Length: 65
Image 1 (spheres, rainbow, N blue to C red):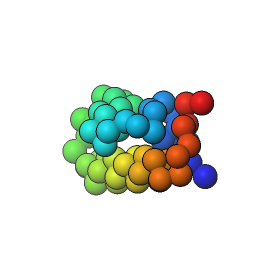
Image 2 (cartoon, helix red, strand yellow):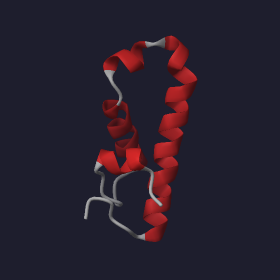
Image 3 (cartoon, helix red, strand yellow):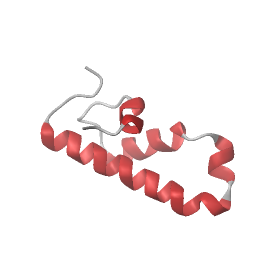
């Protein structure tokens, strides 16, 4: 099962990890990115998006299709 937050990014499975990070950063509200105490949660979110992308690439599925 794919992470719903990853599906909302709308990235193709051929996207680079850097593109995944950029999309994940843009998916967060600017106020959420500005709060320093959320730093560990943001990093965890980014890691989850990268792991979901790696799993998507391994399975060969395309979440946008």
